[in-house]
Image (cartoon, rainbow, N blue to C red; front, side, top):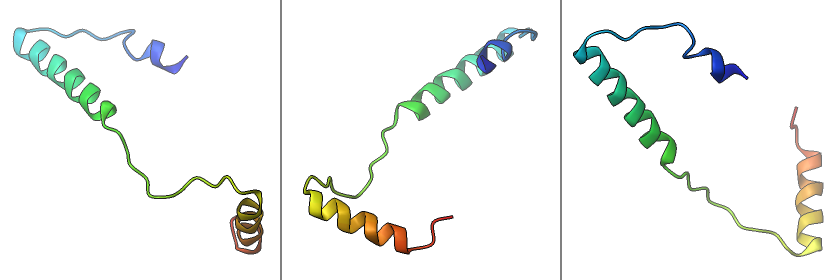
Length: 62
């Protein structure tokens, strides 16, 4: 797993560096907890789904 090697070999020395490191961790946690909102709608009607897929297949989506 990639995250296991991130904290493998580094040292934080000095109280100011420790405070900055903890502050950065707190900020990263806050940024991660924000939810993203997307505009859109759920399609449940099979005909609407087929129409959307047909439209999608005719466009360039490489």
